[in-house]
Amino acid sequence: LVNDTLAPARERYEALLNDPGQIEAVLQRGAERARAHSVPLLAQVREAVGIGAMR
Image 1 (cartoon, rainbow, N blue to C red):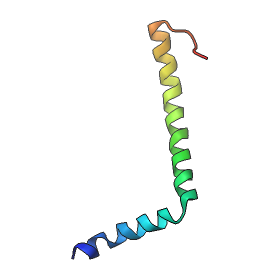
Image 2: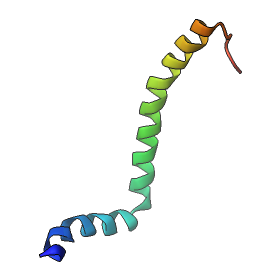
Image 3: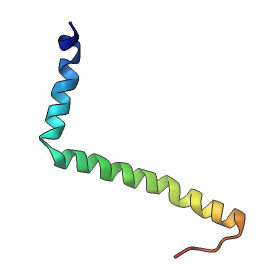
Image 4: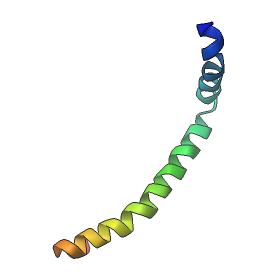
């Protein structure tokens, strides 16, 4: 019963391990989405606390 329940997740896990490019693509998309949200927010925070652009 437990093996039957976990079989789909185990198969997906094994498929991902066999395709590291897919994992990298997902990580890259996540990083792009995070930057799209964090860059404007950090700019607002810097302006609010009086810190100029940090480069």
